[in-house]
Length: 192
Image 1: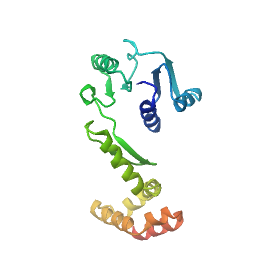
Image 2: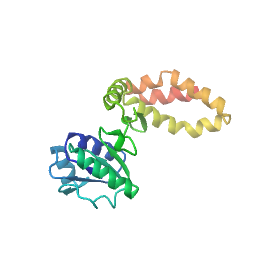
Image 3: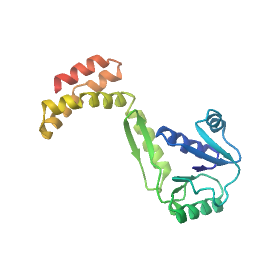
Image 4: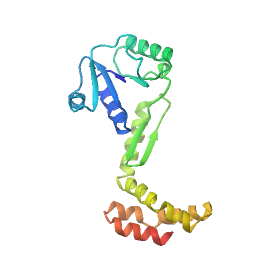
């Protein structure tokens, strides 16, 4: 459940959807993007303002309002109900922190400052996004495909780790970045 319908709430909803969550938004007004998500049935919109008792069915809650008293009330209710709660930009009111995330398929990097500096986490995320392109998601897929083959050929974990290091150093990631997947697989298999 996300309380708030602005730009911050939008970012939080997008992240939740990326990880397969079913999300409910409590807000009077929504950004155009959130309106579109609601219209498409990807999120549920409970039009209105937060009222005590609205959190009872939630697994986790993100308070993304610009009203400190509302955020405190949300945190208090969530804690009383034993529900995970994140209050944007107020670590004292949180029981969990939402990391900044770089996602390339199944290759996921998360960055956290434990709520102390979302701006720092965002800056590091932006740097990592430029460093780790879509080929890293493809590389994770490729390594997943070759996992059983590697385990069969190298039952010893130390040998398997050396084979994995050879794959990573082989230029296979560069071939994936160039769209040359078949060559990357062939090169990886030679390293096994």
